[in-house]
Image 1 (spheres, rainbow, N blue to C red):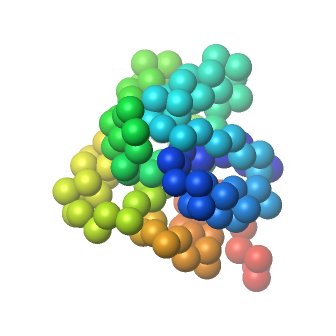
Image 2: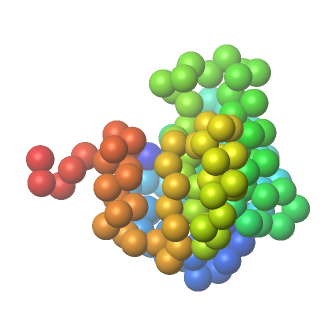
Length: 136
């Protein structure tokens, strides 16, 4: 079972992701980037870091791209090995390529446009080796 953090300010999207991902692990929910950074820091302190983080790009307080950078910086500070780092999937309704570009520069692993297509989302999780293909 995966340890998953869902950072999403939109209630409908948060519920949808929770329903989709709770089948694959324990999901924690936060509503802004600041809470996402705090939750990740706590998971490191407890020595049970998140394996998957879904970050909405546009959130209050701290946006998803800044939260992503903070999380990657924390991993570097704490000496987390690259293969042990959380897989981070950015989610957004924005098709703004500069946000996507920035997110990849900061080390996100994948990107999912909203509304989220559960089949495509699970394919991305397979590619990131978070879940096994149901057919294999």
